[in-house]
Image 1 (cartoon, one colour):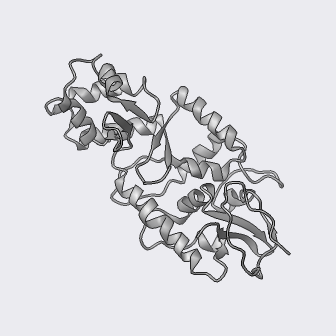
Image 2 (cartoon, helix red, strand yellow):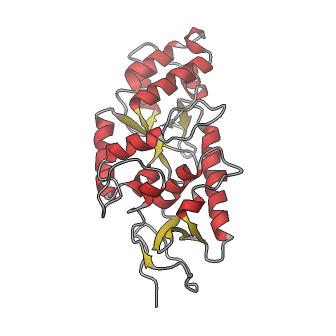
Length: 281
């Protein structure tokens, strides 16, 4: 008997002998994910996923990992949101609406993959203030650019990137802009220059570097490696989420939401519980 098709975001995998734990494929792998991954919300019997993007965002914000020696405000990966909310199209619409309303900001992460982070605007402004303080504060030469950035750039430019001409135009509302001003913003971690186009800058989350390493270079690889070592490349989700990672400062739940939402892992309903299974080699 062949296995039913996997979720739409999963990639096809090679056929293998059927595991004794197999039962019915759980197409989208999300009806029980939120419950298993620690969601605390009231769901109906047949619907254990979120219907509300904002509720999912707020919940995942409260569940952001507590990181030692790192001062980073909570953020949510867009892939995590896709793993927890039924309708991806609605998620995209909601995010665009929240962005225009300045409730949150979206950032393109320099992880080497198509990763986007979502941060509530209040949290982002706290992160900006902390980054400015750590970079030398507003007493250093040229530090007036930080006030210009907060007052004229952040409220006006809501996209993930900005070109140099527009950046200088917005900053010039505060005064004459020099190369030193741009350098200060980059040194504070507020902007990063695109590699393929040096006249385009990404808006950045300051001090996120160690987390990106824990996400792309350590956490994802460690979980996928663990599953790949299993005979059928699968584990009970309840067991997997309790696994203590050796290499990443991020917790397993944070990474599992990401891997499920991005399609690297799919879920399968079995009599013993929900399985997490590799979808690509």
